[in-house]
Image (tube, rainbow, N blue to C red; front, side, top):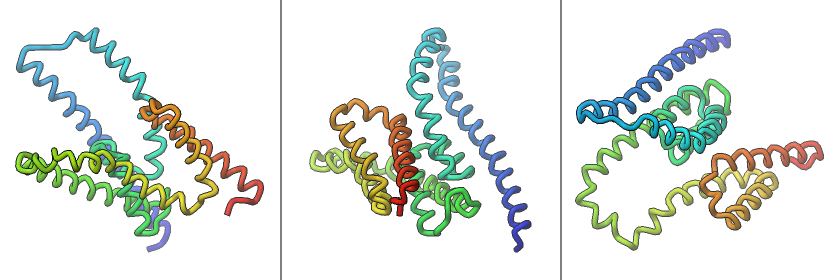
Length: 227
């Protein structure tokens, strides 16, 4: 297949992805809103809309930065199809992004290429299906397994699942360029130790650490130390 035909097919795929993604996102938002609205209609109850507006504004002020940052950071890494699936199904940082990154490493694709877009979409779709299946099995087994899950001996393991996951993923990438990663990593570690409350502002601090890494990379490139 020549390059022109490949580009034509990918453009058609991209257009259909955006169409289905936008329709799916709109449907997901409507379904999320339909549940409380339906409950209010059935029970003949409605919230104080003025208080709701004030509360919503306060929450939005906190999370709008996170929403914008996550889109700007994750969408280029995931591609269009995987981004729609990720933002609809959720659990982006803990599950979807690691799956896409691992699939990209296995297949040897590059970020921003059509191949990476397709590989990321397949990996995120598979992750979503597997997650749904695991959750269904977990709900069915929740009562029989409750004594095991509530065992105090297992509590430390459950509390450290996410740090263990991201520690393993981070080491893989940090080890490729220790000179570049050392300063942002050390700065963030010291910052979180000195000001633990900043853990809740991780999305904002991603921009800070990313800016540090970009600045260091530019300086190392200009001085010939990047390699």
